[in-house]
Length: 228
Image (cartoon, rainbow, N blue to C red; front, side, top):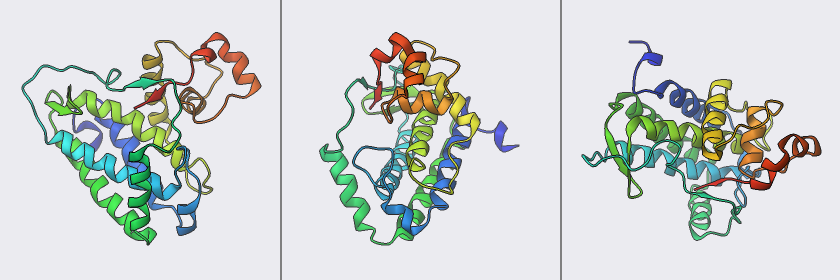
């Protein structure tokens, strides 16, 4: 069985988005760890620690089946606010302390690759219609992994925001994430804007340029959509 034919509906996009994110993390140099990330208040090393937690979340969720009816799908998985994070949330601060505890960059990279690769294998093996429970909600495995395409792509953009020599997300992941984000916003964004611009501006990761503000028009007044 070819890899792109395995796993649940939407697995191909998840596999590409998640694997490319892990590969980007592997290509980071030690000096990149202290560079700022695209997440407010976090360095690259802090974001990598958060990705370890993301990988653990995937493993835990896919191993938490339930017979209950789904309460969310890929789009409604997210809790939406319009207030940008300050980086001072207690959980954000805990992530910073955990990242610092690794001390050596290669230890954090190894841990991320270890649990991240396990999460990829679990995603490939899970039945698409399996119902799983996470954060008090129920989704199919397929919807859960679809939601994580957006998570992985946004954090890949965060990871490479201030780092040179490491590729950003691939086109497939960006296109799939833009489609999902436009579903969350319940509106298409201007075709003149790139997928990366829609995702970074739409979620408040960077301000729009004058030309982008003009293209957005009244839609700009509804931004950002902060996913939690």
